[in-house]
Length: 314
Image (cartoon, rainbow, N blue to C red; front, side, top):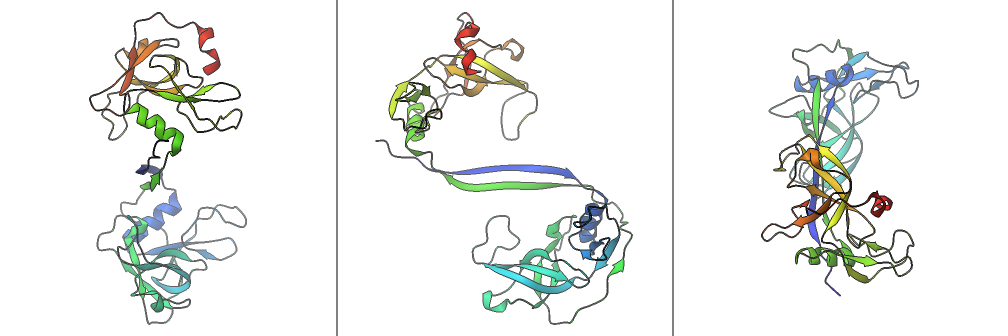
């Protein structure tokens, strides 16, 4: 039995969104060292602000400035900060009800250890040295010895050069273990072979193999070499260039039914103008030197496959 593989994997993408008038004022205010909340129809002040009353669902726009000091309502110690978190040394995640607000704001508290943190302790905002109009303009909270300060003050939300949009990074780091079946599949690819597994009941061959038949639900173990040639079943034309992907647009991604397989896999089509790719096109893999998987598929020059030969794999 081949050794199961594992490798670190990172999934990362930026999410760009526009801001409405309330969120725009809140983030622009942070840039200007001003914390804004919004007053609900019932008179409560919400920080961070929202655009609709959580009780009545009515739109709310009445902005109110609150203090940069507050009280910890609950907390949890983080002994091992991860990439992208507010502080690089151990810190506490805290919910802080800022003076003048009725709800709590989640952020980091700089503290020497968990023994220095408690519910009810007083804290204040430590502002970032460089502020751009983001929640990270609050570098963190820090302990504060003073009493409650100030009262909530109405604010018109007007600032010079307001922030109207933000880019939110999303990243997931984890270790991926493909398991026995896909480890064997990946090992075969490194030797320029493509293998699937056959279901003992329905006799279908699945590529990539999953260790079990998705139709019958029974375990699979019989390896079957398929392809390497196959047939384009469906495809799409990609017109937007992906970051860090050195492929000129437009290009084509297609589902390819490999000869001998009962499940189509997807791959890029090359060696042919994008507008000449079609259903039924016969293709073969192109391997790069030392490549562990096909770089793309190209036409074989064979006549197109008959529709009836691949219609069940659309």
